Image 1: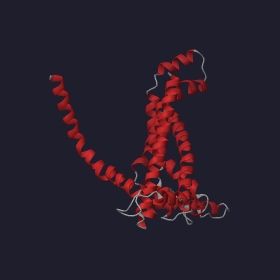
Image 2: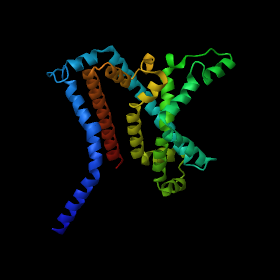
Image 3: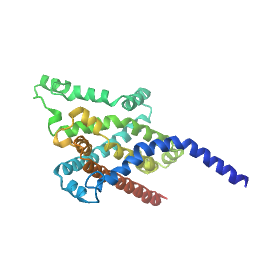
Image 4: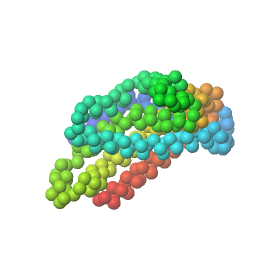
Length: 288
């Protein structure tokens, strides 16, 4: 009886602490998303049930372009971010010169406001920016970076630079959790650097790697802020993302289409997360 009373008191106390967060989450995320699902199946506000919103959305050339660019961006930027983050974490985990300064430098993009970051990249890649000035100095023609096929590469660079610090921190935490005894035993057995890298480091970094990939995928769907501030509401076709499409539909008050796009985007993200967790579970069972 006493244990039951204590568990009830702890449950009530936990609910009391969680209530403000749950209320805010419900008010600003859960309820609006539920309304979006409802609006996506209506022909107008408060109208009758229909599936025409999704049909028109999938047949829309603008939506197809935005979805293709978004998934292409994710497929290209996430592997680059994960590989570069892992390399830097392995480097910073060693005794290198200015290691503490380098760690601070990679974390700085996390605390700098996005507007300030975008201002730096605008100065760098503008028609009259620093990069074009350097190119012209060496006899090359200027490039309109944000209005050409190079715009995709610029956004990938911005995304990697903005998110690399967080991933490096996660990888460093995973590296420091690997016992040193494993490497000592490997040295006694004559294992080389590559054998230790693939046999010990990457093997025991598997949970951290899946977490980094998951966070990188989710963050790749939130690159709209940087793209919007750098190139505006109607950027080059190469960097026209799903968020641009939804933002433009919202400005035109086409609530049904923006709701349908939001629901499809949420379903795609949920599917990717499920695949990642499923892959991690299979890989972990194989390792055990």
